[in-house]
Image 1 (tube, rainbow, N blue to C red):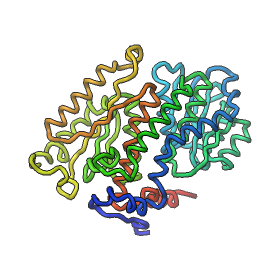
Image 2: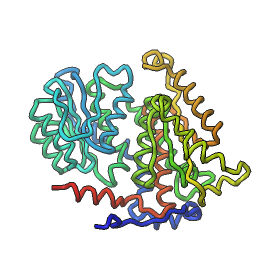
Image 3: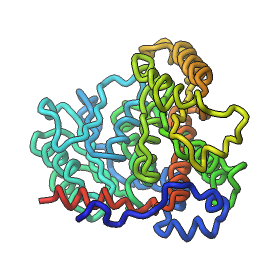
Image 4: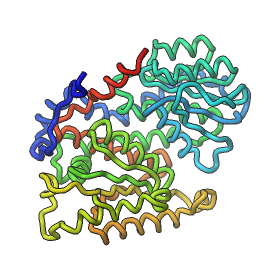
Length: 400
C-alpha cells in the first residue's frame, strides 16, 4: 500500500454543493446524513429493546462497588455519557474502559457493561470474557446474533440487542440509551420515560432544522460547517456535560470531515491550552486579517486559523451546583472569559448553548447540530463520510 488507498476529496470547500440537496445525496451514497437524522428514532427503538430485556438479575445483588463500561470509540463514549448523566449524586464510580480486558481490581462486587455496535469488537469481547470469568455482573449491548451475544448467553448475562444499520459513530444514541437503562436498573441514574421522549423529540427537531433541503443560512449544521472551513477547530465544553459533547464533536470531525480538532474541558484549557489563542494559528494569524473583508473569503483559501467552538451548559438547578466540584457560576464566568479572550485576538467563535429540562436532553441539544456539521463539512470537501479508508487499513494492518 502507498497509503492513499481509497483517498478522495479536495482541499477547497465546495460552497455550491451544500445548497444542492440532490448533489448532497449523490455524494453521500452510504446515507450518513440519514443515519444521523435517525437519532431520535434510535432513542425510541433502543429504549423499547431494553424494556424487552430482563435486567432484573443486575439488581438482585444490590448496589455494585463500581461500574465499568467497556468498549472503544463511540462505545466507550457511552461510558462518559453515563458518568455525566449520573452526575455528582452517583453513589458508585463509573469508568469508561477503552482497552482490552478489564481493570485488575474488577471482581464479583462490580458490574461490567460491554458495548460494541458490531458485536465483535476485540475490546468488548475481552471485557465480557474477563467479567464472566471473574464472576462480575455482566450486561452486553450490541448487534444481535454476534460473538458478543454468544458470550452473554454463555455467562447467562442480559443482552440488549441494538440492530446495526450504520457505523458506530452514527449510532451513539442507540448504544447510549441501553447503557443508561441498565444503570437505572442498578439505581445509579434517574432517567425516566419522559426524559427519553423529550430527548428523542429534541433530536428529531434538530434533524429537521439540519435537513439537507434547507439552505446554509437557515441550516445550523451547514452554517457551522462553513464556520469551520479551512480552520483548526478548538472545541471546549464549559461543564462536564458539555465536555462530553465537545469530545464527541472532536471524534466526528476526525472521522467524517478529516479535520484535526482540539477538544476537551474548558477548565483544563484554562490551565494551558488557552495559550493556543496567542499562537501562530490564533492571534498571530489574525493580525493580518482585513477586518472589512467578507467572512466567506476565509472559506476559499487564505491562512489556516483557529475557530473556537464553545459549548455552554448553564446547568439545571441550584442544588446541583452545590454538589458539583465546581459551581456552575464559575463555569459560566470561565466561558465568558475565554470568549472575550478570543474576540480580543480576532479569533472567531461559534457558540452552542444547551437547552432542555433533563441532563440527557441538554446533552442531545449540544451533540445534534455538531454531528450534522461534521458530515456537511466532509461532503463539502468531497469526502464520503461513510467510508474512512484509513480506519479500514488500520484494522487490516493490526489484525492477526
